[in-house]
Amino acid sequence: STRVYLVLDESASMSAKQSDAAQIARFLKNFAHSDLLLERRVTDLQSGLSRLALEKAGLVVLLSDLLEPLPQIRQGLLALKSRGFDVSLVQLLSADDLEPPLGAWRITDAESDDGREVDDVARLAYLARLAQHLEGLAGLTRSLGLRHAQLRGADLPDAFARLRRARILERG
View: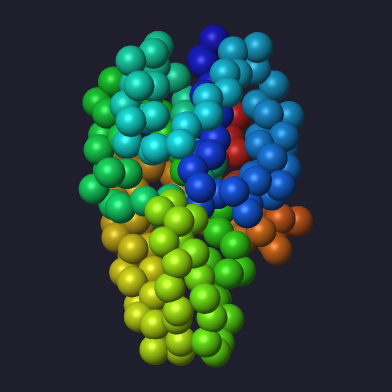
C-alpha cells in the first residue's frame, strides 16, 4: 500500500490561514482513507521537503500558500521528485494575499516581522510581484509534472471541485 504524506505548511505566512488549512486537511484525510497516512508539519518548505525526501517514497500532498521564493520551493520539490515521490500541491491563498485593500496601510511581514507603510503604488508593485510569482510557480509545476490546485479561503465550498479538476483527488 502507498504511503500518503500530508505536509502542512506552518510558516508565519500561513498563520492567518490555519483555520482554512485545518478544514482542508481534514477533508483530505477523510478522502485518503489510508492506514498509511502520515502528517508532517514544516515551517520552511525547502528544508522540510528535503527531509521528507529521506523517508520511504509515496504520495505527497503539500498544503501551503507557496509564498516562499521559487528557488527554495523548487529545491524542495526536486528533492522529492528525485527520490520517486508523487507530489501534489494544494495552494491556499487568502483574499488579502490576492487583493490587498486600497489606501494607505501599515503592514507587517509575517515571515520577518518587519513593518512598513504601504500605499496604492506599493499595492500595485506587490500585485505585479505576486502575478510573476504565481506564473513562475505554474511553470515550475508544469516542468516537474506536478498536480497543482489553488484554493482561496472564501471558496472552500468549491475546494472539492477544484481538487478534482487538478486531478489531486483520484483513486487508483
